[in-house]
Image 1 (spheres, rainbow, N blue to C red):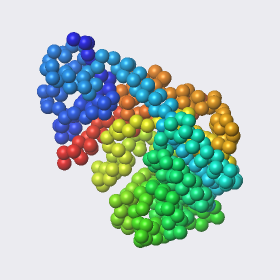
Image 2: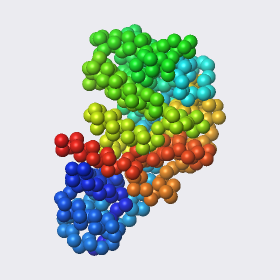
Image 3: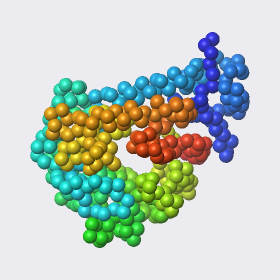
Image 4: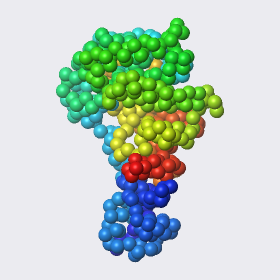
Length: 441
């Protein structure tokens, strides 16, 4: 028999109601166990599976092999994960494309990270260059799919450009898996809504940081005036119109230590007000720059997990996945072929890079399109968590995927110490405890 051993991707969990489970992060499998099997697996786990395997039936061994609970070599499994990641990174079938038609914004949010605002708007020349580049990828590289995001600044300051480009991209005959517009909601008026529907935008993300007194302090207009009332009026008009539910509306409530306790109030208020199955209200964690971070505002990974679990335990609200997803995808930052295009045609690899000339990696108007291959290589290869010895040995690796690439970039190249680990790390028992309640209660 091939020598098998207990996988480091296994977690044995006993809940407060004495339900027993085996979770395997490689296969993302959760198996309910009888007491006797749980005890046998506990014994196996304590000695790394080097003995006691004869205590299991042939059928049990085959099943444990199938879910990768018993393996020959975990390191080979990591190599397989690495190869799959590289295949996704270098696939030319899907383009993750973010377009910022302007960097201008009518808001002056207190936590905005866009420090390098540039004037100007996306021109006809740049629009044509974008269309021609997508056509080129389709004809020569076999491009089949686009994940499309409209970004800024405030993209609805240039909504006519969004409409024009969106319609032209739609006519190229590719599968548009996602067509998301990120807006502050101030210009989400009935006139604009109608045009966005025509352009087949499918999802709108709007940020609302609580009720008027909180939101207007954190997200005022440039002149200091509040924005809450205008955003709510726009949402009221939308949900009372014939276009109601034309989009999936995601309302992001940015939270930190100063306002997270009020999240449930705005969550309930918005859901009661609009009563839509296509409305999602969720908390977004404001990540401050390490130099600005202090104990009064920053939330640690475990503190964030506590908030998410608390919201479910007390209110039954699932604001974050309680079970690891098995959607394997790579961030635009790391994929050499995906891009964020700024208003002058300049290309970046991350939302946070927008406007920083030192971090441009090309220009859609240039014949060669791409340059700055050093930065592209650092993002794609230099911060690859599969090359990190600590990550390779981590039991959470298959469900972690290395965390935010920009935070890893700061750690590797700027000497920072950002926590890039998955929220499940060290807390898998807490998550399975609550997930078990959903399954059984």
